[in-house]
Length: 577
Image (cartoon, rainbow, N blue to C red; front, top):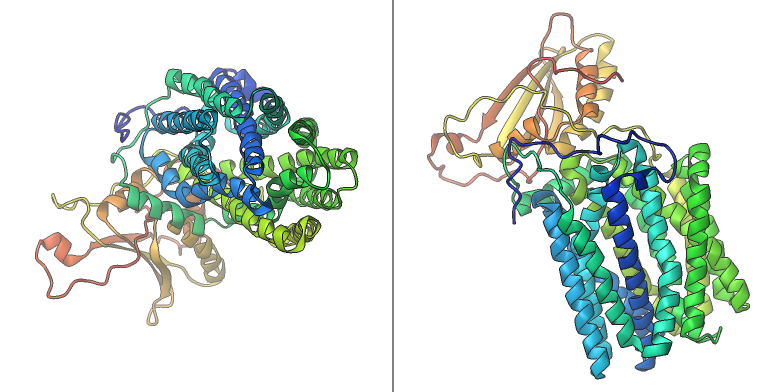
């Protein structure tokens, strides 16, 4: 259901009013609803890992090859890869709490059906993969929303700690869940592990049902899903720092997935371990994650997020190589402790950076792209390295991605630095409302916006450099075909132009999508105006859309992109740059 309750209502609380922000790693757990959801998700993660062990082990019992075992991970991640982008748009369009309730209910149903089918002895490899994929559909719907609601549960200053605690949650569950799964499988079979997973969703459903999420302020009502998806894509393409986070996550996951996809085959084959032994190996990963939770805040504050990700990637590469050689279970277990530490260092750092860079209006849809590269890398990597293992052997399927991880760390250092200080906080509308359409339909368009800037002398070079940055800011909120032109007859006159698909989307730029950084950037550009000059803004709508008459031929519409216009007067208070 579309959330329309917040129109002209209360803005969602970015964090509870009390207690104040705390820099310690445990600070987010002082927030009651973050703590409740964190504990409920921990139970859910334990059930998920018990399910993962049971599914991979059952596939082996059904006679599956190394490729078939790896396909279990593909089934668990490929639906997320395919559905997470529209799911992220849904998370910005509908009530996130209700979408989370729906997704968790779907996962509960899928896990329950799989438990019943396993108990009845009717599970085949296709059935196992299909129900695992259905669980992944629920994950696709929930993953962007779970990340997007974090700034509503903690203070902005606590987001890195919250991301670290969420990573520790998943990885401590990785330590406990597989061991529990192995014990349950040994005592009662895979069906009992699947039933445990189904029950684990009840806690999350209970917390979400009771969470009093504040109403969302949507002055123009909810967006349609199609334009919302396109707006998310445009935002990601025009945010270089966020795109650098995506690139690092993609390159890391493509190679890192080899360990998770093939560790079961390594445990059953060269290491000769039982289901319990495999669970102990995964428990070593969880132990490393616990250690990482303790040391990572210090490392991140001392060396910065970019270096932490690079070094942790190299350490992870070393552990993959050690597991590939499989000298002995004890050596592999010791390497997996470092795997857990480096894994949580990479994932929590990238996740925190992604959340810090995004404004509320685009948070879920942009984080969906983060989940896209994360899950897509796992799905494609599992398929790739499973095929390599079938052709060249397990050792090669570990050593080749280990080398790839080292290369990924080096490439990451060349990308746009993380932690650039971009401030995505939303502001109250600072631009004057554009002129009325005279009762015409809000979806009239396309709209052409022009701004006349008068700049001269030595200011031209600095002005044009700022306009390149301002162009990205305009595109993030929706500009298409943005450009700046200099008048050949009057060299001091510069014309900035961009298009927007509809008048409704242009209003969203004025009222919903501006940020402190964007406003400050435009103020810096205005400082280059010649004395006494002002920016002249014009809004032009496709003539037939306004007049109501149709042309002889339909216009060739510009690509559907939105953007934020420039004010005709100086904006309200702006943070200093």
